Length: 229
Image (cartoon, helix red, strand yellow):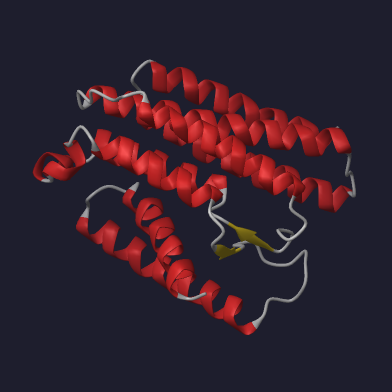
C-alpha cells in the first residue's frame, strides 16, 4: 500500500496542476509537475526497497503518468498559447494524445527496460512545463519575439509529440536496477550530467530564470541522443 499511496500523491499533484493551469497559474502548475516527478521517483524506489510490486501499482503508475506528463503539460501549453493570442490554441492539446500513445507503447514494449525508444513522456512534459513557466515569469520573453509568436507553442507541442512516438533510441537517466550500461551509454550519461552542471551555473549567474535549467538541460538530452546513436 505504501508505493500506491505515493503514486496517489503523484496523481493528486497532477490534478491540482491542471486546475492551476486552467486558472492561468502555469508557474504553480509547473511546480506541481516537479513535485509529481518527485513522487513518481519515490514510488518506484519504495516498491524496490519494500519489494512491494503489484499489477495494480503498475497500472496506477501509468494512469498517473498520463495525467501528470500528458494532460497537465498539454493544458499548460494550451493556456500559454491562449495568452499569446494563438488562433490555433487547441493544437497543443495533441500533446496529451501523443503522450497516451507513448505510454501505451512503453507498457507493451519489452525492449525498453533499461533504455527508451522515443522521448520519455516525463522528459517531454518537463520541457513543455519549464518553457511555459519560463515564458510566464522571465522578462527575457519580452525581448525574444519568437517566444511570443502565436505559432510557437503549437509547433513545440507537435515536435515534442513526434519525438515521444519516434523510434530514436534514448538512454535512461536512472542508474542501477538493470544491466550494466555499455560504454556509449555511460559516456552519454556523463556528458549529460556535465552539461547540466554547466547549464545550471550559466543560468543562475545570468539570472534569466531557474526554469531555463530543465528546459535547456532536457533539450540537450534530446540533442545528445540524436547526435550520438
